[in-house]
Length: 186
View (cartoon, rainbow, N blue to C red):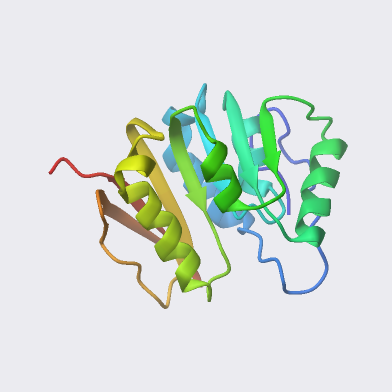
C-alpha cells in the first residue's frame, strides 16, 4: 500500500496484520482521487473509520487544508500514527482516537468532503453516519456543495437517500464500491 500522488507520492504505508482492518486499495484510491482532484486543494476533509489513514493521508498529500481522521481500533490507530510519523506529517490533521461518533460531536468547521469506510458488515455504522449527515445537524457540518462518500461492498447497495442526503453516483471497482451523496435540493 502506498500514497498515490502529491507531496508523499509512492511512499509506502503500513497496515495492521490480520483481517480486522481492510484498507482501501491503491487502485480504488487512485480512481477516487482522480474524480476528487478538482476539489482537494484547500479542502476540509474527513476520513471516518480511517483504518490505516491511507485515504486521509492521500488527501493531505494532494493539498487538503485539514484532514480529520477518526479511528478507535488500537492496531489501526498505531498504523495511522506510524504512517504519519514515517511521512513526517505533523500538522494539517486531527486524529480522533475515540472514533467517528466522538469526532462528529466535536466538529465545528464545515467539511467539503467526507469519506467513510466502516467494516463492510457494520450496516448500522453506515446507516447511522449517513443518517447523521442527512439530518439538520449533520447538514450544518457540510459546506455548500459538499460530497459524502461511502465505501462499501459491491455486493450490497446503500440506500439512495438518508434524510437530506441523496445518492448521485455509484462507482464499482472489484469487490468494493463507493456511493457518492450530496445534500438534495428538495
